[in-house]
Image (cartoon, rainbow, N blue to C red; front, side, top):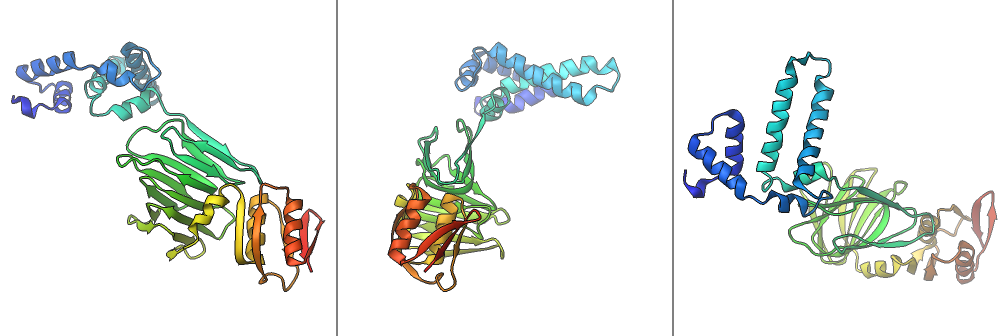
Length: 323
């Protein structure tokens, strides 16, 4: 056999099926003797020896076989043990080709979840260096460490991302039916369950946005936004020149430059987790000013009322704004 055509996976398969020639058997055994599987498997594992790994794999296989064959007669016990042993040899022999699946079997990555309360902001840093600012009432799911080709996370609520650049390992965010794929950039995602839309706003860089039912992704560049309307299942790209405002918004600072009072109230309800009712005729009034949503709601409503010449009161658990 030509050394250039040597394929450990192919020879391992032949070994299991009994079709390995003497020359191939010699080459395969020599390859395995020289292969440092201990360094490969232990570099990212909680185990301290390959014997522990083999034992763990064998236990997993035996447990799976026991669950499937428990009602059957004992005549299969010898075949079960032979199959398990062959599977162990095959897994170890092809470790170089299937490192990530093997590690996921013997040392699964723990999935973590972080949730913020209404009015609470949090900033975290992931193992790859990505930084994330979580807005109030947000749930974020992520692994304790990234393994494999993709860096997968998911979010419900709102968060601002500064993704660490890594061309070989795209960062993938699932937010409802929307999937956002990036290599390294800064952007904001709004994906509250109660909201009518899911918005992806790009501050800088480039991202691809798609739905679960669409294979093709629509690309966004700086100062653009993708809006997914839940009612119509439509995905629309639009220019958003004021995307940089999310740099302050991630810290709870909201700048309103002529926004309708209805829009301002919507943002306050989302950030504080409260209900605010506007008197008739107030919804279309424009508001200019800055509100700090990390302040107590009483202080924020006082500032808003002073600027808009309004008064507020709390009735039956909801806030009322009127002239």
